[in-house]
Length: 232
Image 1 (spheres, rainbow, N blue to C red):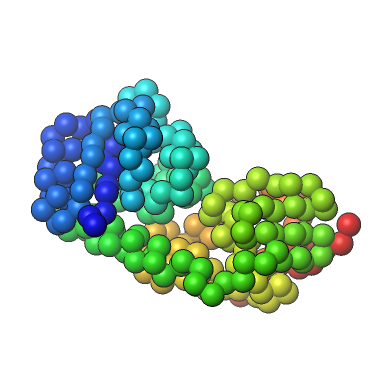
Image 2 (cartoon, helix red, strand yellow):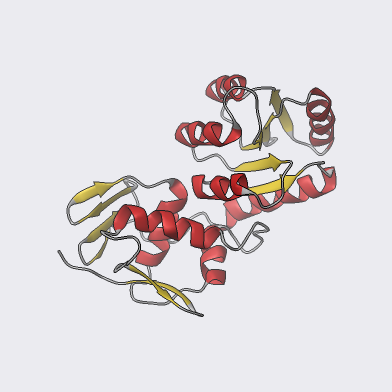
């Protein structure tokens, strides 16, 4: 069955050009000029991947990403006209899988799409234990996608949950940036390496009493990060 890609961009010519190229490459495509229209399309038929422009009329791509992630853990590639700006960092924090700058080179976009789909296959938890993991006063239940800290439930994004799950499988063990990227984004990740730092910063805000002085997820300078058990 063909993979379904939803393309969201307000540039009509770009939509037509990219849709033509994606379909020639063997993908099923839908397209929308606004985030609002794209969300309706996704409600009718959930796509396998979304290519999402950041600067859209009405609801912008960053807000749209939050809505798409609530509909399902759909991989998203951002389109941006600006290099390494705040939008890209925010996009990574919210859970975007990759980004590509305009003008879009179709061959590069197709390579990024294939890499994202390969990462999804690579990161499927084939043999990861589904039993709840207890690290001090932190409980992580993979089957229920639930986390509690000192008895209080904490709501995490899919990427934050993956990150904490990876740490919880190796409590007290230092994990390097490269190991975390390989485990969570996949070995062919082509985005910015600061994605790990960004997600750890957001995760600390949710599970640490004082995120600026973390006591659970510790930075081991020059090596990586580790999860330390904490008691109530």
